[in-house]
Amino acid sequence: GGSGIGPDLTHFGTRRTLGAGILAPTVENTAAFIRDPHKSKPGARMPSYAAMPEADARAIARWLKEAGR
Image (cartoon, rainbow, N blue to C red; front, side, top):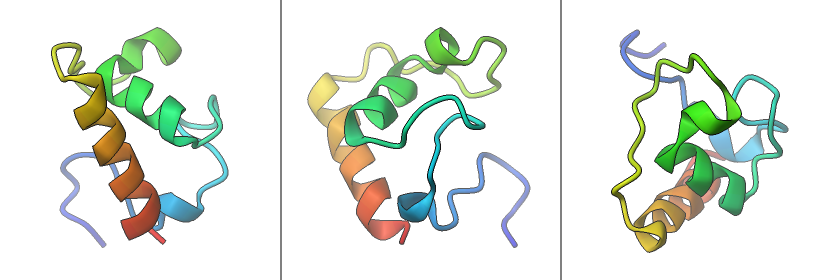
């Protein structure tokens, strides 16, 4: 399924890794990946959101963990 645009977030909350297997899918790692995916995964096609407040990135990460189960 999906639109083919953007990442497939189906069952994100049950995944064992983040960023194609490079990180544990913790709230902290997910928030950091949202803000700067290139730090952990050079060449990632996802844009950086470095200006996003840390609290907002953590809120999105928590939502992804819960909603994506």
